[in-house]
Image 1 (cartoon, rainbow, N blue to C red):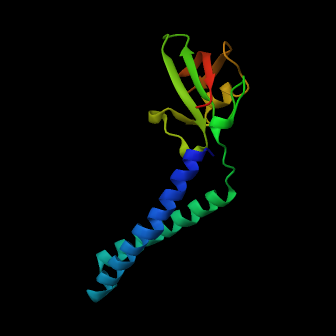
Image 2: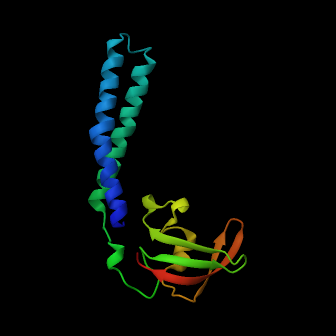
Image 3: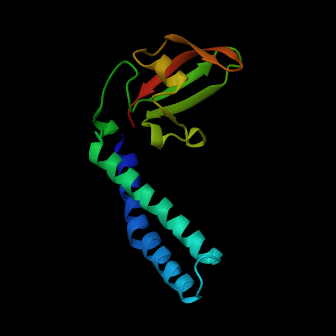
Length: 152
């Protein structure tokens, strides 16, 4: 994962442990004070949220523990690799798009970050500026030209 993705994950983990977990514990305590737990919707909702929070904490701790953090600014390559920011030109529409290739959980197409597992990223890996790629998509195949490879 990228340094930014690792920092985001650690911040989310801190937020879950230091804010969300104590809030849900307080909500459970308040709901218990209302009496009969079998028909207490507030209690059941708080317990369900607690389960979700604890699951997220375990998942984030696991990802952080297994992470290989890559500082993309220190990378240099003529070809597309993990962490590269790639500008491509749609050969049909002449529209340029720029994407950074990141880990699965970091991907957000609206922010220009695509998963290394995505079809377009897999097609770009190992290619250089000027190369053409063909990407199979549900709407049909698309051809792109790699215009620029950068590490920013």
